[in-house]
Image (cartoon, rainbow, N blue to C red):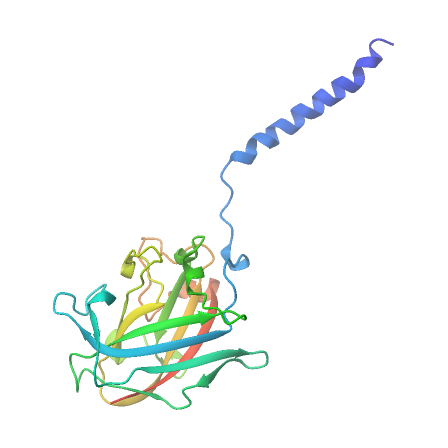
Length: 244
């Protein structure tokens, strides 16, 4: 009887040893989550794009990462803007800016660049841009600015008719630029002859990282084939432009 009385204790002790190895593993690094299935930001239901014409100072020209603080808005050229909202049946639809936005080319005014600002809003009407900087969201989001000929994305920068530079600034005030490009703020200039085309604006939500295997990022106009296959695209807009 005395031996039998220790059976419950032995069984409990054995169970404890079975559990311990699994408990010890809980401190091991977990496999990175696929962020496609874990959005840490609200879904935008409204987007506004503003094109503010102006000039950059000589000390901060249209180079790899121009700074917004060196930008001076034009006193004569107007700011252009367009807004889209999500419709349950048809997706993103323009709700303002019913005609193509007129912009000037560097062929007619070489000094003019446009500060491009993109703002997103949630279903409560609150601006939600800061959410793309929180909880590592800046590492998996990147806007692409492209031009299509039919269904083919134009790959040659010289054939685009425009050029773009990322100029994002973190809420902390840190300049991100090309090191951590998101595209909520940037500079664009129109380099081609007078024409009309749609500027495709797409926000990529990468499953793990927007950085490529060599640590670089895809060009502003050309996501990689892998990104096109595996990433989710939070936003896809067409901005109609007429270049003068």
